[in-house]
Image 1 (cartoon, rainbow, N blue to C red):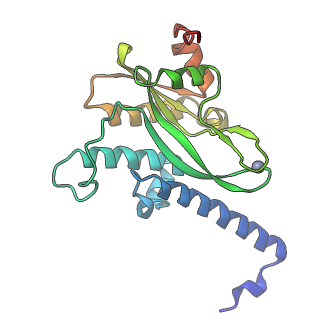
Image 2 (cartoon, rainbow, N blue to C red):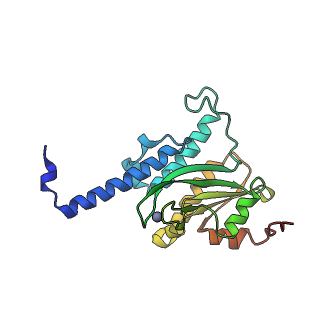
Image 3 (cartoon, protein in one colour):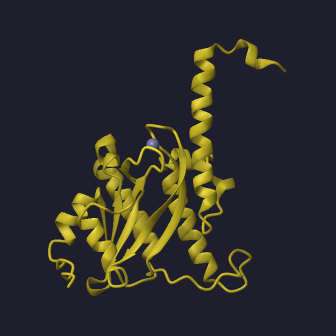
Length: 216
Ligand SMILES: [Zn+2]
């Protein structure tokens, strides 16, 4: 029963840290109303496919979005139909890496450029999906995948965290993510692309976005 007696302080610290991290991840997912896939997480099959919790959350969202549009489905019957092309937000509880405070952060998952030109300007000026710690006031970019949708070009670009590429993801990872994205949008007439980091999005697709109108 008393297994804790055999754990050294260092080990206990490590375990505690891991537990904390996992708890935060789970909380993050639970705060997203459209994601209800907690029970399917951490399965060996998912791990074998090299999916992160974030990826699984995205897959879960795609699944629940698809499910909620089907009549008679038990999930989301009380929700109005979701416009898959609408700008979409979620909420996370994230921990400040400096003062360890966990605080609420709204994160944009899907940017419709026509609907939300202000968000496009924020992406360009690197003020997009920032979290600000309420205690130490530090700003930090939240590297959560999001999708940029340009209705004029019928183009959807998924912006992945830049570290995925550098962490040995490379071409195979890119191809796999592109395939996921293709599956997600197969029923829609859109072009798709995957980039790693907002800078790639800006350099490749946002060069001709006009500057915001000057305030008078
Ligand atoms: Zn802080």
